[in-house]
Image 1 (cartoon, helix red, strand yellow):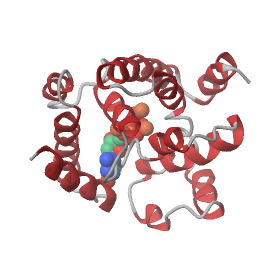
Image 2 (cartoon, helix red, strand yellow; image 1 turned 90 degrees about the vertical axis):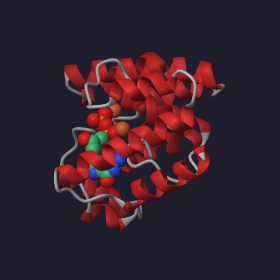
Image 3 (cartoon, protein in one colour; image 1 turned 180 degrees about the horizontal axis):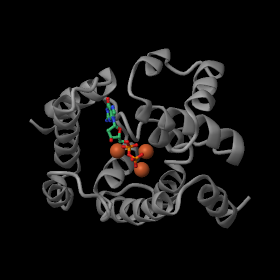
Image 4 (cartoon, helix red, strand yellow; image 1 turned 45 degrees about the horizontal axis):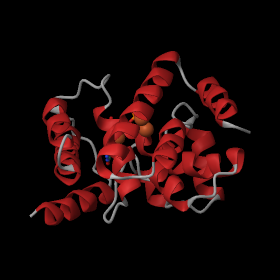
Length: 187
Ligand code: DGI
Ligand code: FE
Ligand code: FE
Ligand code: FE
């Protein structure tokens, strides 16, 4: 399988809107990789595959979580979180991706985590600031992303935490840990 085969396979899994999001995440990840010195080829692969399981059913994702021994606390938290760790397992099997950094960039692209690698940060941020995003406060994050990767990520995590709390939703502990960690990093 080459990159064109991967592209076709990803496109088949997604809606048109989500496919266009994926292409914008690829472009944004490449820009960030160049700006901050991440491996562009790995950024390209991780971005292309990051939302592979976005439209899988709850049951199908649950099956992967149990079968692959993924953290079972996911099952107690927002369904939106599941496609990231599940996607990392599935692209490993379906595309033979073996690079741990690429797999972790996919695995943690939604929750974030403390000690994110440069590649993980690039994918996390690209997903948040790609030009199609209209989150409240995204423009501030885009501005920060022009010079300071860590400050941009901290701001995006703060925005997401505020968003979840405003909507009365649970916060996944890894996201809170990621935010506290980034706060120490920038100060
Ligand atoms: O898959 P995408 O829509 O491109 O973006 P994503 O994978 O970053 O998913 C983000 C959604 O997940 C966003 O609407 C907020 C929601 N979410 C629910 N619980 C949590 C959470 N996001 C984080 N970071 N932490 C949570 O605990
Ligand atoms: Fe996602
Ligand atoms: Fe995200
Ligand atoms: Fe995404």
